[in-house]
Image 1 (cartoon, rainbow, N blue to C red):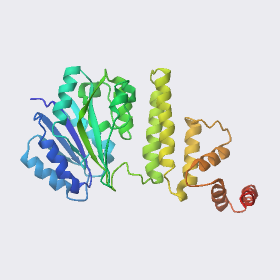
Image 2 (image 1 turned 90 degrees about the vertical axis):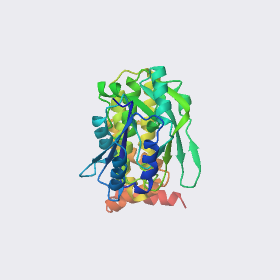
Image 3 (image 1 turned 30 degrees about the vertical axis):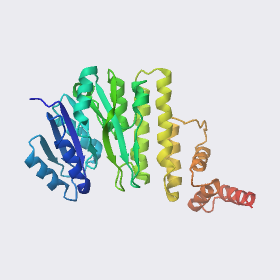
Image 4 (image 1 turned 90 degrees about the horizontal axis):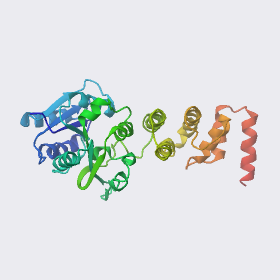
Length: 328
């Protein structure tokens, strides 16, 4: 019998959290599901835990990657193996309400919806719990579906017909799914439970590499997607505003030592794609604006960085001295 829902589970070094995740899947009130757990070359005992569960439940299939491939590729691998009428995704360090699959599948069938969505509860490290309210805006327009991708199920025939895939992470999949979905049905009484910890992929620790891969990667994908598909003007502007937010979110969390490199990368990206409101032709001036926009720094520090690169360059040294004098 074909499963009603295929649940794809990327797993990488999450052994302390993995048992609650797997328990929440094996004890779903909707029994006709399959679980595709992909161990992405974990260095802890995640693989052993997965194989233990698979030995006890024939609905679980374990795939072991010989090398680490990152979450987006792992989820796409899961889509290749999925057989369910709908497909959903859960990270190996989170867990679902036990009636998550049943309630969302019933909603999807009742509303003939390509996407059926619940809500997300985020358990913060300080013990606080935040419950999302994004369904309120999604009910007004399916194009408000940005974020909380995991609290939903997706009709697999839609995903396969339009070859919807993960390219960077969440947002690339969501913008495609929202575009092609006939509608998104929502209910507010079933939860995806997100456990935030130091190793969480959306932690506020941003390296230059992470910012380029996630924020700029998402922003550039969305920019190119929106400009190659038909959208109403207000929807297009909503997505482009989101592009601007993605550009600057991680940038403003970079360490001071990475800000100059970040400013150069962002200036080049904005000149090539989208100017984010900075209509500046001179890229040196644009970098200076970006550097000042960073929440941790000032123009003086930017000029000092430039001077350290080219200490004999008088056009840099003079502005530093002038700026320093004006600050006295």
